[in-house]
Length: 76
Image 1: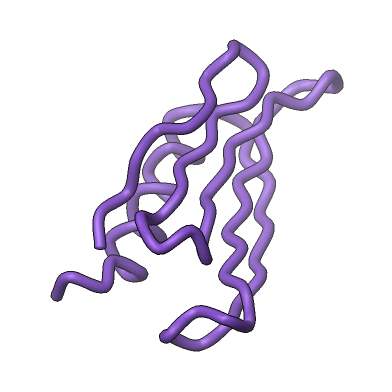
Image 2 (image 1 turned 90 degrees about the vertical axis):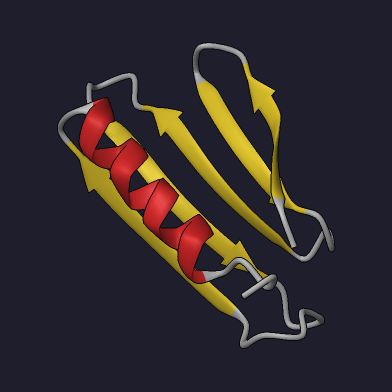
């Protein structure tokens, strides 16, 4: 299943998996840095999960978000 960019407004960037049961989000923090979050619902065919990490820079957060999307892509 592929991921699509659902929101990108300068503060929040969010991708949703095509089955609708998983999202990956980046959020700019007002205090600086970026929070990356993975949320896979219980209804998903793969194991449910919730992970959240803080990063000092956006590039590191984007790398983590890409890794989560790759790991949770159901097309493999």
